[in-house]
Image 1: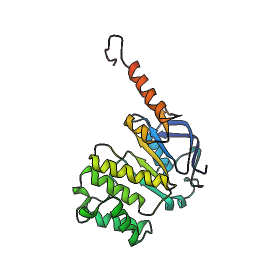
Image 2: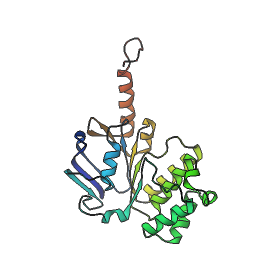
Image 3: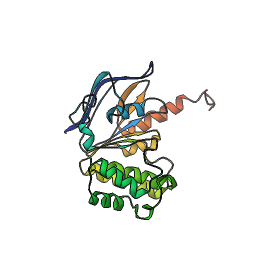
Image 4: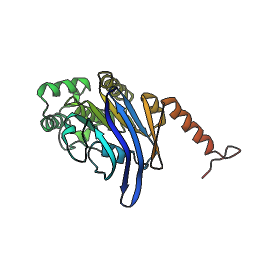
Length: 235
């Protein structure tokens, strides 16, 4: 299998605090690789490193054959959905799409494609700020995929959105991966592990690779360990 992302012994700090302490993994073509962990364990730091948003000093990172510390060339084939709002809230939906198409050198037909894919026709004249969570996430994904990337990096996606938008996003994500795309998806809701091919469990700066079912079982075991004899919850 062709490897699109390779990470070897990556270390990252925020200030003086170690966040990642020797993370290693690979992700190939047609894979959805999940990065799971509770809040504050370093998922966003890791994903931002892969996307070239955050620089690193220790370790090796290769994204689409490039070192993100030395070049931005790989970003031409990269789509990113961040956890924090990344759209222009004062612009209308169609203006956000136009801007991203210009930035990523996409064409008018690409705008039309993602509008249809993510069913944004009824929202084009609305400002991004006025969108509810579901349509907002659909617009975020449309902007990420407007240039037909081969790698998609997602920091959370389907939290707190309506069921219709959830199913639509999962449908399009499945099409992307089935078509040979590669997805790295950071998530914190344990049940989402079953949507991944493999999962990297991030804890105490270390990443452990697990199968989806193993991830679920590990979480269930941890929950049992958090309970004291008699069913009292430990604090």
